Length: 493
Image (cartoon, rainbow, N blue to C red; front, side):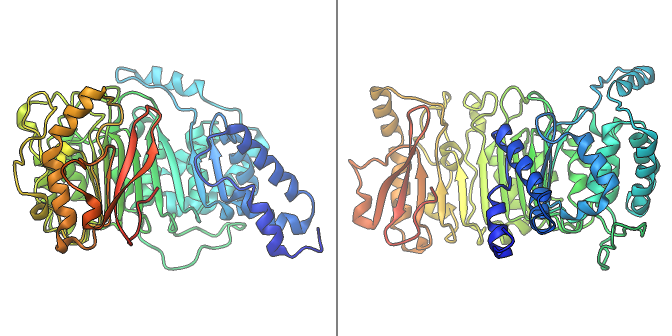
């Protein structure tokens, strides 16, 4: 092995790197164990494999235990410089209910304590010393909770120490701001001014003066499969100076008082905002977007009944988008998926109006919208799309558009007769899509995604330079299709 070029060894070792969601826990554990064994083989192997081993770290019950990783970085803080992606899937936090007294809270905290030996306490105090500046008023709390063996203090240390982080994923527990020091410490770090000086050598006690200045992506997920956490708890972290992407799962944006009462944020550089399983109405969308004026990618998927209930009114959502002039200049991708929302298809008739005109969005390249959101639905049962309540698509959509996704709910199955009836109902939409494909102003449009065939009995895409192709078959037996402009970029499979 010493005779092999180090570039080749690095390529070999990188095949063991875990760099994304961990779907197979045993494989993840085996890869880490193999890389750790390689690091012990020789100094050369350690120099090459160690950055790969620590590049992506998953912490939680089924991965590397938080306690083990914390002990390692307390004793060898220099290794924190190697961590680029930190995923905290599960951590021991108290299950606190709103009616709990202080005594009950103390009891719950006692149940998640871990024993910290006296020698390790000395390491903790020494390792924490350089973090006093970036932790500010939360420093003493974070230190004391580590010495008491409480995992939220350990998490703060890990996050604050890993100054080269590009991606941070964090599970958000119940009553996140009130009874964990993670929230207050992260909030403080997010508000720190940008430091121009490079990070000092973390092996000595020189003060760190910058905070996660390389952080590009932040992911926050509600810890349970039910309910959601308040959006006002998430927006406080959008001011990390380098943050480009925020992904939130099970966030409630309908608590308008909390959003409006949230302190004003300094200017942030957020470009991508993805909210999955979200609860959001027009007022909440306005509050959210007013705090990220530079967003270029906006993707919202509404949550199901297990998350909560909110009314999806496309017309009001569209008005919010049109009222914010910065969006019309910079928004490149818009995805609105309300199909899992509680009672969406049974919503009152007045909520069946379409999104409305996006003609002024001159940078918009990708639009994903349900047929109801695109063209409206004035049938009380939510089954037909007979009328266009506003403009035809050629006057509604911007000429910058490259991809249009109008796929329907994936959980709908049709009998042969029902499918024929659905195709008849969709005829007005297909006519509009055909006109869009044939309009010379929309030369940039190269893909239209659907989960059905366009009505070829009445129109022929091939005659106007388009081709209909099958993308994939879903697990329910339904098909996804795409209309591709011939001789242009095909649909992304």
